[in-house]
Image (tube, rainbow, N blue to C red; front, top):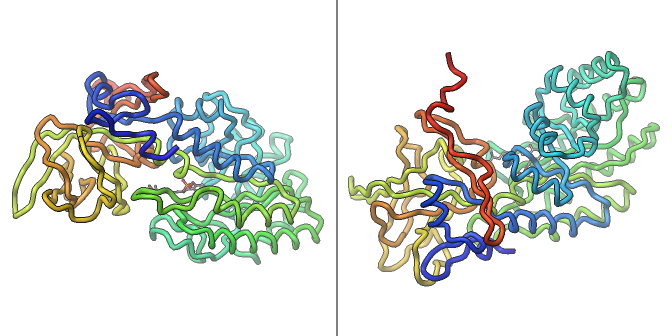
Length: 425
Ligand code: LLP
């Protein structure tokens, strides 16, 4: 299912699957997150199909979007989960998932989080340092259990992604180099409270070409051969997440392209594959709908000031990220290139109400004329959208709505002012 099938224009307005977006906005207010359930399920299925020869465990990366409604739907579809905190593990448990298929990543797991994960009998910890390995061993010993671990290899591969989201290069805080990896593996072998079951890598997010994966999996193979020669029984390769998302058009390779370089290598190793995709599953399955409050001309520019802000979607402010923006009411052909000059239209900055200049969703975009009360759609907002939202400027978190065909479900209510301050004394 393509983005424009999930979110399609007909009869002069935008629909999410079979439901007019404007109807949802009228009923639940703006800003509002609207999800196409069939879109994210189809992305999940495409990954499952592309990698099926490796008997994979697809661990949807909860950090990308942790709404319980999304997790429940993914769980029903057969997904497992990648968590990075006790809170995410709690959500996954509440979604009814089988925690024995969950992987736990992150550089700073606390003792309480490790204890909780061991109690849940998770599939593996992705271990980031010797100190963490020691902590897992100590806690597993206290609990009389064995901690299943995969050491996170920093493959020193350039993922060619944003400086703030690259993780697999030497000098990042993530993982360990091959030498340390092999040293720690030797240590695990002598420890009755740890078992090394695989290797973990994650290069960055998003990785828009398949080549870094080919390089990473080649390094993984080298390390696994060494580990096996040392007596480890390695059954898992966890390649992390990072598959690209088409924010603009169809610039990201489909899952099947990544599979072409990954599957043969995993089969040759005789391993099972774990993946931690987040963005590529949920990114294009959700839009943020806002309403224009004012238009303003100042300093030779046109501003559309709408009610969505950087507290709702922080990605443009934080990573200069690109999101397609377009009116909800529109009759005509959509532009092929949303960044290009469109004859007859005026360039505008789409900004929010927050007291910061970085509070914008788009700059200098050629948009049809919009007026007070018009609805605006910010596309590709599903990944790292609602999960990174905050109540900055004391703006309560907004509603999240899940659409499947003509069925509409509230999966998060709009927060009230009372709820926003409820935990403060
Ligand atoms: N596994 C690990 C170990 C990760 O660090 C990440 C993302 C993933 C999996 C999922 O990657 P994905 O498939 O979603 O690309 N907030 C940023 C992205 C941060 C990514 C952090 N790690 C953004 O909005 O672009």
